Length: 313
Image (cartoon, rainbow, N blue to C red; front, top):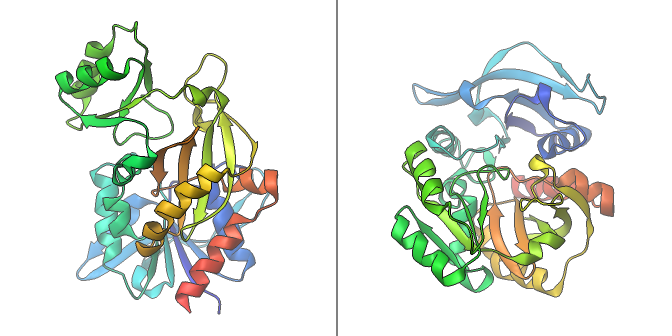
């Protein structure tokens, strides 16, 4: 049965159609006969008992510079859709959190992917805290003394915003670094949020592996290798994607976390693994589908839609 699908995402007209995972998901939906409706998060509203969105029916094609055709602007009731995709990029701020509250109201009649209740409660750098046996030494704190003590124990650390994304604001502080207090002052002056610190993993020089899970099951991985002289491997900041397989340790990590992801409605998840250690579980807007398809021939978007269509049945 064709499904009515709504995409809550950042502007689709400006995406990189050869890299963007949401575009690939939407293109696969269209190929399977599903209809598409696009809107941005700022056009989501609760009005007198209904969750409404103002946006456009769309048709997509893989043609650079001409990849989307918009229908007439329309206001829709999201409870009339079969599937709503929660796919805008972080930052994971109160605006983002508010959209999760509103999208909860259309469930269970409408399937929201990923489940917004658990997206809200499982942000990337916090869900890993449930699996300390899989993660490097980690602390979450705003207090400078606590962070100083962590650095004294581990020497070489990574310091980053708790709710950041794409490698923004990630700093490596080695044993000789003298900038911890200044960085703490900078971060706490901009935000009331805590920071996250982790022991630096030298294996990041070999790459930061993105493992993609669909409904709790791993379907493949890509490796993201940092540029020379760079600690961050995110593709947003110049990391180079390359082909890589899944190790025994990767599969062990997936077996440990997979049942929880499946139980909580996290259909499309990307985890980050450095060496033998899990560093993040990305549920808000994970990426990597197109790179995986190019390297391995794995159509992750099709696997995702097979899982969604099964849930709708």
